[in-house]
Figure (cartoon, rainbow over the protein chains, first blue to last red):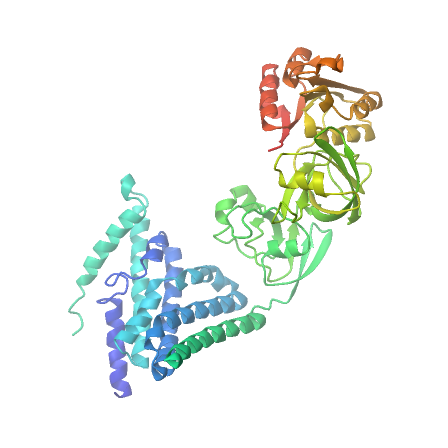
Length: 198
Length: 367
């Protein structure tokens, strides 16, 4: 495949990862921080940006590790362990760098980084990248798209919850209950995007 | 076959180890915040290596800040005022600080990372908390189950404390104890001599520290303590004082009485000392000496069940009964209690009946 087809495929994969195959609303990955941190738009914004950054970078790092280390040695089955090790190490490293060189950025983003390590959407993106056999350039599009899709979902959820904060919600449904119902309705809404891409 | 097992293990382990090595090396270069100076109370300057949280850096310099959760940000005890250099308030600190604290720059020291020079304020009581290495120079039997231990400070050589405070004694690992534990004992000695500490300890059946002190500690042994801790102290007013304390509870009271003698404090004071049997009374001569040394002090021992041949002429019954018989209106007094929770609760009740409001009752419960 030449560069141009790859890039147009990357673009298609990116758009589909944001809308039609949203990693959160279609595949339900990364629900924990989604429910936990979506109370305010401000915090959701910070977390969402961090997720975009980590998802893109780790998908690429994992692509390299898979195709240049695991495949040649025939150790595909180790991808689960290796991907999570790489994600954890990467997040640690980035946290260290941000903390040292930009305290303001650390203030807004840095506190979320350890939380992201255990976000299963990050691992999920890397594993999907392997299953669907994406090339390096397509992986860039996929990582970016998944991250943006997750970001979009959590911002939308935070906006809805901020509006709801003044409403009276029945005792049993407060907190996680109403959030999951909203997530389900959002997922239904996103199904409306199917057929956008052919 | 073995090769197929070994290769993957080696590969993944080396990648894991390699990443860990990269992290350690980069931490050394990236997380190098350089030397930072911490100004404490405008009195003391600490030169430390930046990069860690304030609480651990202070602890490493032997300044002990209270902390129950070990720096995880879940107990809220490690509050300090950070006047300069702390950066913005972290979301992990917010739940533990009220509006007034936030305005006065109070922070959780376990969450403040030291990246540059800081100016902080530590309450002087906390500042005084140190670890002391002492030598046990005397062990006196006061009763069949209470001993007085005299500890001479070796390093540092003196201790500054407020009469009524306690220290924590480190119980080392010995036959009946598999890990080091700390137990709190009130300081009982004369505060005029800052180089020694006396503790009055009662043997508790099965107690880790008391068994060590009674059966294993000998004169000449090294003892480690840290402190001083505690808010139990005499208020600086002129109100008449009612002391109620039994057994080893005499410890802080004795210290307070020495202090009153040293400062020529002429407040009226009465000390009700409760015991079960006459043979459980101790330091009677010291208390009689206080009666002549202090302007207006009387010592009233009450024995619950005097032995037949003891010829006991003093008060009989529970110490709380003696208090009730003796005092009529105590609403203007201050009460200082020390002893078992049961005795303290009973005493608070009796004092309440005699008209003393709870905000004038101070106590140190030996739990």
